[in-house]
Length: 157
Image 1: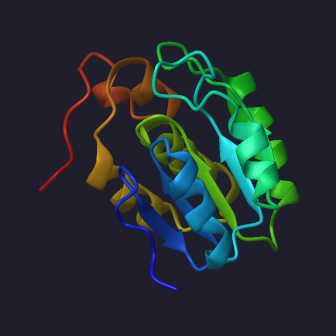
Image 2: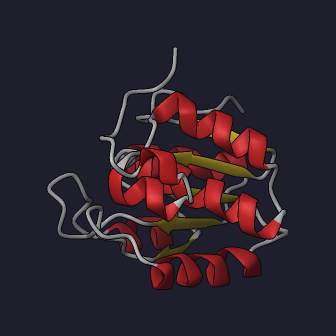
C-alpha cells in the first residue's frame, strides 16, 4: 500500500509512525490499510478545519482515537506530558499523529525525540524543517532559545 501523500503535509517518520495536517474522512479511511491502529489528534475540535466527529469516523474504521488538544498559541509542558504519556503506550503499534497543519505534531515529535531518545532527534528535526521552522512560543517549546524572538518561517528548501 502506498502512502497517502495527498494528505496535507503528510510525512512518514518511520515504518510505524506517520504524521500530517488534518485528514478528511476519506483520508482517515485510507490510513487503515497502512496498518494504522491508533490516531492521535493534537488539533482543537473547534478549529474550522477539524472534522465534525473525528472520533466516530476513526472508530467506524476500526481504529482507536486519542485527542490531546493543544492550543496553537500556547503549547504547555502539560500538553507535552499528556502526549508523551499516550505516545509511550503505543510503542509497538502503527500510529498516525495529526493536527491541523502538522506544525504542532512535528514540534512535539522533535521534542519527544530530544527528551526521550526513543526517536532519532536529527531525523525528527529534518522532518520538522520540511514543514516549518518554529519561532516564538514554539521555539521555546522545543528548546530553540535563539529563535524565541523570531517568527515562524516556512520550511527550508
